[in-house]
Image (cartoon, rainbow, N blue to C red; front, side, top):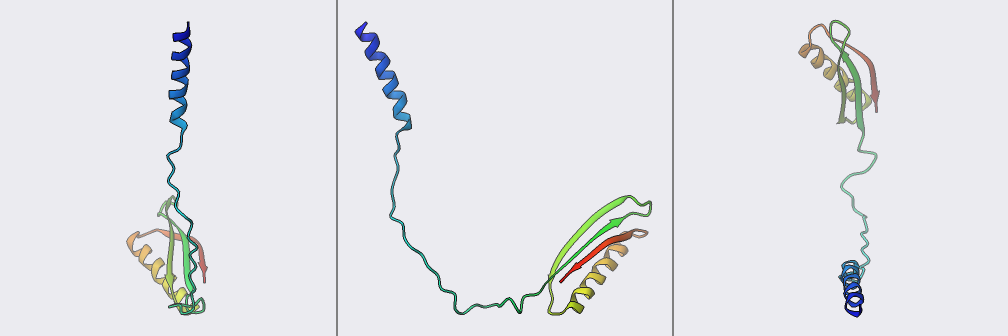
Length: 104
């Protein structure tokens, strides 16, 4: 009976050792980065987003288009959107575009 109890305890001890941690501790280092001279500013970065839906000649859904570009003016954003839609119509003759959204 003693051998059985010791065997059971040995099994429990062996199984419990699987939960033991072999952790390696590395001291935490404080990292601080000062950004004083940036290569860009928010005023210079003007993203332009263009979204629209394309339907085929039968009115069936063909594609959803979402494109981004960097422009300096809202006029450039509208020009980008117009060119993008013209290209899509040229690629898919008879298609129509709807739900146009231009975010500048």
